[in-house]
Length: 114
Length: 113
Image (tube, rainbow over all chains, first blue to last red; front, top):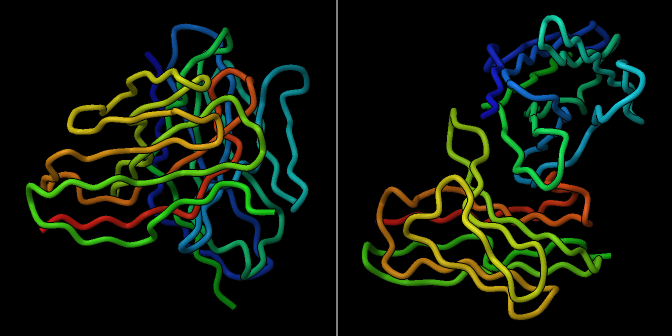
């Protein structure tokens, strides 16, 4: 079975500062990794994913995440955040074979203030 | 350009009442999912469907039933609501890509008194 740990339930940061949201996973098999974002009163949106290839993946709005197999991590980073990045971010994992259910972390709330 | 639409958006029920949550998608997706979101617990999969006429249990299926009579619709039923089912429910859908939902609805906030 897989599990995901997001140790930080809330991360406050000032606008234009860098941010890192941490995600660690546990799995006995190879996995795919995902980050989803949830804006207030909305459903989740897929932000970025790691399936194979380059361990550094990027989103269209400036976020990036790096898959580190040895540390079983998939931390999300952004060099300069905006007020509009305020949201809850969920890390998720699933085995990389066939149809497998996604396992979500408990989420990290990013609070960006001016 | 609707994507995934959930109805209703809010509902308050009394213990023991029944209701059905409707999810509709207009993207011709094969897979559809029902999740519940509770504070501090992330999203948990209730039931899912890999195609019209098929359904399967997720992590927390007890107390819920589902049906997928048409490809575009996925219904979640509560036969006898309990306070423990107070939650925000999300429907999601995806192409045949192996298990990760691509598009989510905006959720149904359900309170059971």
